[in-house]
Length: 323
Image (cartoon, rainbow, N blue to C red; front, side, top):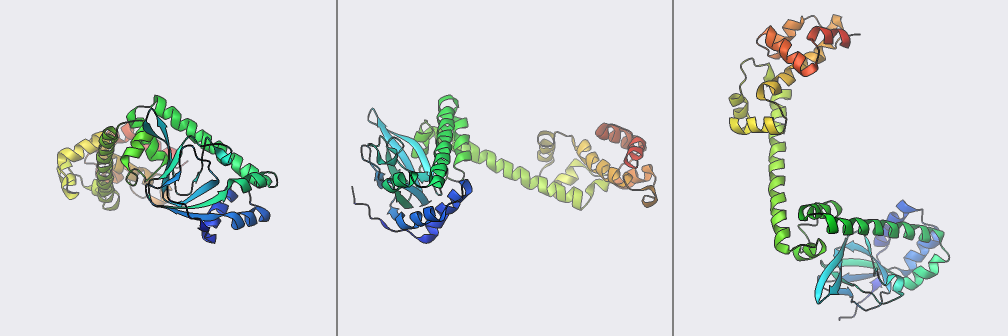
């Protein structure tokens, strides 16, 4: 294995660690000085081994850029036990603080920039620095909570739930990291992961298309007030946003859970309710006139729609709104 070359750490990178620790507990000046004195930097190429199984881990590492994985061997099979990414600490779990041989190797799965703090110095500072003790305890607590959640979802969750878990905990990394390592972490075959990934990509594409159409609908109705057109139709509204009547009808039924008539009437009623809530002296029109301006073609259609959507008659609503 190539010799690891440690260099002087960039003060800006050390500041990243200090900022993270400060969010847990204020870093004292003496601890800050120790960090600046003892932190060193290390560059790893993709595929390079940071620590091999059976070695003693001499450092606690912080990932500035890149990603690493823990990997152990069981019955000659390599198993990914965790994946750590930018702004996370990583070290041997089984041999923490260099107090024993590690049972898992640590390997770079991207070109990675790390800074490292010697375990020997950490152990010495534990006896001197309360802030280090407290911050490290919180970090370890969070790590084991994450590990428990990860092991739980892998034991009891189905493949899709495990995939969702990875998306939530490592947002943005599904397209960056090698799928075979993610699949190993999630205890599934790479072909299963690829299938689920494609399914979610299709769902996301449909969601983005739905959002785009909803924005166009909002523009037509809220901005251009198309609901005021008494003869507005499903076909004319669909045509104005460049989709078929069938697609618009499906969107209204499945996304808004409304028919076309109820959808249009909801905008009409919303407009009328806003005007009815105004003081009487500022609202010179009758309720029926407001209904006509809003697009209703008949008094009965207006009253039925208002009662259906609001739960009370227009007159009752006006009285309650102006109290």
